[in-house]
Length: 173
Image (cartoon, rainbow, N blue to C red; front, side, top):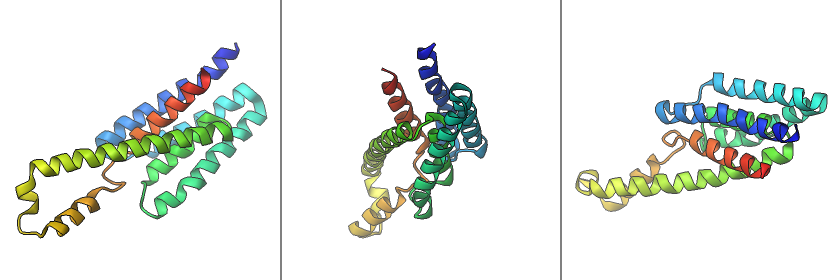
């Protein structure tokens, strides 16, 4: 019985985060319906598993991550859907400790995703070297390219899904 209780949040995370990542790759946005479903299902799951204390811990973890990530949206480093999905991860994680561990996993996966994006774009730029730089001094072409790497062009839902699911799976071991 205890193993089932530990694995259930992981299954819920996979059920919410994988579709969010797929939609984010396809549309470069995460729908509110997925985020709201993540919040509500996390609250219900932990309420059913641990009673009122589980429900309140889940609400607290979700709110802490949502509020904590809000500045990333304000400064334009992350989209609103990404911030809301991270809040939903907090609700699904169920406790503040697990939510913060998932957040560190998400941030680590985000760094890897950003590095892969930069490498990919530099590789693509080098393949079209003549057309990208035509008529521009080198420093302007470089500035323009680096300016294109932004939260709007990178599907951060992938990093959210990978980081949170890996951390939650490791916590079960």
